[in-house]
Image (cartoon, one colour):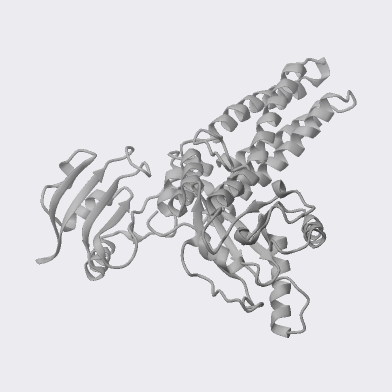
Length: 462
């Protein structure tokens, strides 16, 4: 995708074009151009004011013409470098949403010197031109893909700088110490110390504290970004499919009094407290000689192992011993779970049960009773009841891995500072390694392969 070295990508001499709005028929389509000739190219086909004489951040009405043929009446928005998303000249043409019009306008712009943009190339240019750091650029894709309040908050917070500005500041301080230690190596024969070891150690403790906080935030940040897989499990005919329908408020799963109706998993998503949950209805857990039902039970066990949370349904007529045995089996999975007694209308508090009713949430999935309490219990169980827009989260596995490697390198630096036998040149190497991994997060250190892997996942036009 990206030819040549990263340094060669820092300057773009061509102008790119792409549809910035979703493909398909709509009220309008926005065609975006970026590059040194963006305004000139559009001016060649624009019937209206001379765009090259207009100021930035203005909108102009006119027509797009292929010679004498008028393709459409449009609005043209100008963003003159460096005051644009890419820090290049950017032009956005708002046409009517006809696919015929959009395709022909783009063909016309290519005919006059633009080339079709590659996936993510607009944001790539914004990154390489210093408008965004790499973590902010990645957050652009996350913001476009966000489908809940929580995922939107995480992406927006990261796109606005999030933790990257704090990391950049600490990295710059670490660079200073690295340079001081390098300077010591030049004067090694004179036994001169330019880097204060205590100050360096204090800085590493601060960086490690931030790294620890960010690494701890990953699980929640990833959940907020990608949603929570929740398995509904239990014995056959305990009301799992009825509960799924109650949570979704629609008849998504077939409900029957015949045990074993659900043979395979059924999945659907809802939003609770601004977070997307993917609920998975499963086959009832029991011993069976039916080959198809047995396969469904096996898949139930697999889904339970993969779940972030298990909602395990109990029948009020089950014995306390049976309930305890089932809970022991769930505990072996080491996955958070909520014990729910369904069909609460059949439950009798004075029936002499030997289990603690406070350990269960009572619901009636069929009558919709207790569903709100169950939703609250889900948020509390996963510690997701409140999500702060000001909280700092990481949700990208690439960032987590880079932070882990940074911490490993910094731990080696700390060991070296406590060991007089470790010379300055080894300290310098470990600091450089930590700087490398920190730089990978914000894009201070990049490779062509890394950039291609990140930006190729973007949609074309962004």
